[in-house]
Amino acid sequence: MRRLRAGQPVALELDSATGPVPCTVLAVSGAVALLSVAESALPRAAGCIANSSRGFLVFSDHGATVALRGAASIVEGQPIVRFGVTDGIQLPERRAANRTAIETRAVIVPLDDDRAEHARLETRTINVSSLGFLLQRPAGLDRAERVRVELYPGHDATPIKVVGEVVRSDDTTVAVELVAAADQPSVRR
Image (cartoon, rainbow, N blue to C red):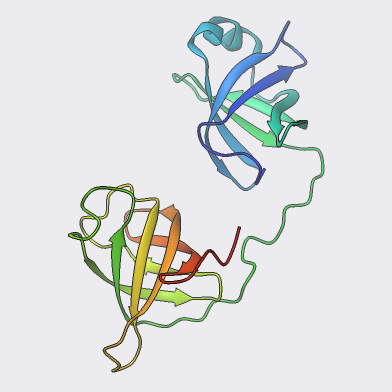
């Protein structure tokens, strides 16, 4: 399911449907994808998706067609389908690097909007790893995707500056995956 991204077009090929049901990926968590059903397909989708309708989630990945076997159920009262993969795939360990609980001062600077250099949001780290860090969510952080993070370990006033992508966010925390040192080319991708 790591090949699925929010906004990606997909199709549901259900055993109970007469044709593909076009959808768009809203979110992916583990082996479950939330899909928005295309408005034109809503009546057909509502009629053929019962609780745990079996079928395939079909999408394109780098030019190859991928079909994942699973079960689909409609979220009551909404044009949203929950699709859970059931074909026995093995999901990689979510945490590829050990995390260490370290609390230190940090500053987040959003890089994907016009206010980037003016918005310096103070926060604290919760834990760090070689691939990224978990931070307390600072007030004023909206929907940034790419950020510069300045870490101030110990009593040293010289920050460690890195560029990262927000990979998860909730009301209290924000998880940032390391992309590059702020003055270096990309380290992952």
